Figure: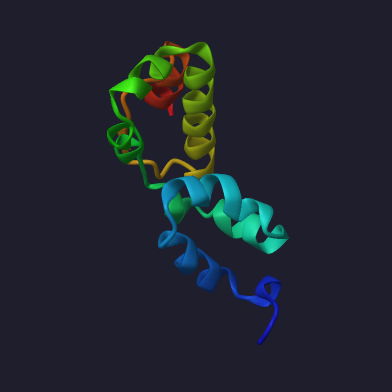
Length: 108
């Protein structure tokens, strides 16, 4: 078996399209440099759908959505995706972010 680092970028991007959003955003860039580069491919970031994250949390999770820490985490993800999409971000589905992030999204 070959080394994961030797896979073509196209193959890595194809693999990453099958990963859940959180894995694609948080963990795949940590594998190695080639995975980091592939994880920033704009084709992976045409849609940012965080609704499943919100829907999976029960009512006990909802107060956490309004904390400054949660807002900062959502903002960080949104701002990263805006940058990585290279202008290709077409759809954003989320329930909460800061006004600053919304402004950046609108101005892109």
